[in-house]
Amino acid sequence: MSAWDAIRIAPADTVATVLRAVSEGEELRVQSGEGEVRVRAKEAIPFCHKIALLAHVPNAAILKYGEVIGEAREEIAAGQHVHVHNLRSRRGRRTAQSSAP
Image (cartoon, rainbow, N blue to C red):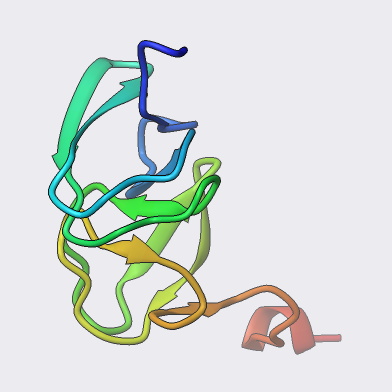
């Protein structure tokens, strides 16, 4: 069994990936390059899904791998499950930069 419950891949990441299924109310130990971060799960989170490490307002960038992976569809509190229900992916979307000749 791992000493960590979740992993933050890059120091700037605003989410971490849980390393096991998590129950609501659990305090998680998150491995981070800057040491340990702790966050309490506000809801159950499936294995390998994301947990918010800080609060996000609607349209705020969500970072994983040190990159923006999408934006918040709604307010997301620290400790909430982050997935397609509250994350708008930027993958495959055209932007002004990507559509320029």
